[in-house]
Image (cartoon, rainbow, N blue to C red; front, side):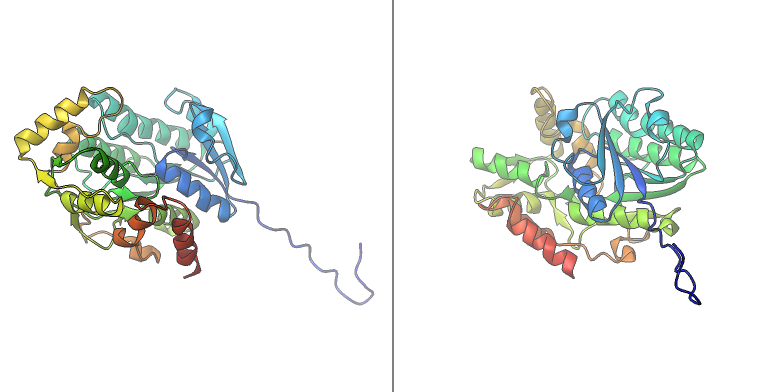
Length: 331
């Protein structure tokens, strides 16, 4: 249709197409919160999963596509990547054999780097961990460092995030210690004096979204840490206090701590703590201060003292936490 005589025809304004991102580990603790942020920001998100039942809590989100796929299987990533602008890798394991750490933290990043290069998808945001070091005391730390090295060697636009221990409404950290204190009269604790800088899952998700929206963060390694440095014993006491079941915490010497962890590894299912976890705690899990932090992304990290009561208390993880999130978004 032409414009009025003597007037220029207004240009047709075409909104930009939504950006598309492939999220590996999108059904997990951090991935689920990231998917919520991506949906609010208008991204189109693809989440592969080996079991569709694991994605029930995210598949309702607008713009999110769940696909049945095993990302470890050769050829799967090459099939998933076309049409995407970026990838977020959240796949990680906390327990297991050296082969299991190698598969999740090194072999998968290697396959991902090769697939990204083959399919022309250059933007990658990878979640590693504070304490990732080639000579670290644990298999977890060494394998995380090896995975970073594999990705840095590839010709990719890579941003690496290194979070400390992550807490939030559905974590397996503070919730675990709150449950243990509800069942035990005292809590013997390995690594009681190890120091952490716990970071809220919502802040990690916001950091991931910021990096996706700001390609200039490529080439950076960003430490994701909260505002407080606390010992493991402090965090356990916090979980017991806000979970309404505080119990005495008994620090164990290193030899007994490893024995306790070895016994826990014999229990069926995922162990509550492993010897490799105890080895990791020989190094403080705190920010170095020499790398960029959340503040460089415009994020003021939330205090564990402010957030934990909203989901460990009698009201549970809903209601108060949603209100807190709304308050944070409005700031």
